[in-house]
Length: 448
Image 1 (cartoon, rainbow, N blue to C red):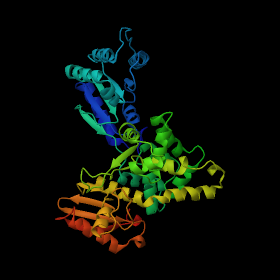
Image 2: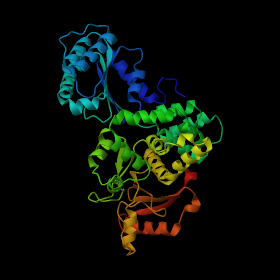
Image 3: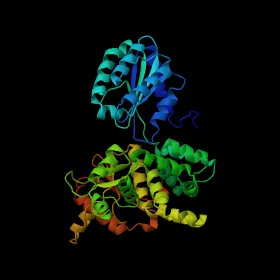
Image 4: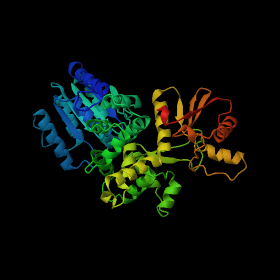
C-alpha cells in the first residue's frame, strides 16, 4: 500500500515531482491536473509538493479585493517576501510571481482553474500570454487544478480519474488479509467507494471490505462514509438546494428521465437544474442508448457520476425520521433492501465500466431503446423510448469494428430468460447492427 499522505496515486505523484525537478533544473513547467470533484486533485498536488515553497491560490467566485489580499498573504507566507500594496489584481500578482521566478525556484498552484477560464477570461488570456513570454527564462513550477479539461497545452496533463476496478480489487483483497471475498463483496466495494481514494482509504482503515461491513459502516452514527458523501453534496450545492436534493433523491431511487422527474416533482420545469447538476456540479451524468440516433427524443437518462453519493441518498438521506429508533438488525435490513433494489442496474453499469477500462471494445454502452424496437416489430403498442428496460432485454452493447457483443445482465443465472433475450438480439441484427457479427452473452454477479 502507498506510503504517501495521499494514497493510490503513485504514478501521478511521480509525474508531478518530475515536473517539479524540471522546473528547477531546466526552466518553468506548467502541469494541468484535471478531474471531477471528490477525486482528490488538490490533496494529490499538495502532497507531491510537500517540502517545496508553494503558493496556493484557490480561485473561485468573484475576485474581490478581500480575495486578492488573501492571495497576497499566501504569497508572503509561502515565499517569505513582501508583496507590494500596489498589487490589486490577479494579473498584477502573477506578474510579481513571474519576476520572483527569475532567480528563485518555487511552485504556484492555481486551484479551481475552470473558474479562471469561465468567469475571468481576461486573466486566463493574460496568464497564457505571460507564460509564453516568461517560461523559458524562469524557474516556476505552475500547477493548474481544474474540474474540466483545459484547452491550453501544458507541459504535462494528469487526468485524475476514479481508481480502476482492477486496482480496487487488489486493494480490497489486501485489506481482507487472506479472508475469502464473494462477488457481491467486490461489487459493493466498487459501489460504496466509487473509486475515490479518500473513501477507499476510509473503508480499508475500518476493515470494511465486505458488503455487510460496508453497509454497517454507512449506518454508523457519525459514519465517515456518510459524512464524506454529505459534505460533497452540500459543499457543491450550498444552501437553498431543496429542488436539487429532491431531484437527486429521485434519480438515486430509479427515476432517470427528465419527463418522469418533472412529473414526480409536480410539473415544475427542471431542465436548468439538470444542466447544472451535470455540467457545473458534476454530480449527475447524462447517457443515451448506444445505438440511438442523435435526433432521438426522450431517450436521455440521468445517473450519478459518483455511486457513493447515490448510496448515501438511498440509505441515509431517504431514511424516515424514525430510522434511528429501529433496532440495529431492522436498520440493516432496511438499508440492505435499499441497496438491493437497484442492484441489477448497478451490476450492468459495473460491467460497462469494466469493459470500458479494459479497452477491448471501441464503444460500450446500454441499449434501453431496444424495447421500443421489439414492441414495434411484434405489432404491439410501442413502448416509450425512455421506458425502463425489462429483465429479458439487451442490457449491454459493445462494438469493435464490425463485431458486437450483446449481453444480458442478471443477478443470478436462473433469472435469465433465453427466448425473449434472443428476440432482442434478432431485432438488433435486423436493425441497427445489420452487417455485424453478434456475440450474445450473459453476465451475472458470479462473473465479477
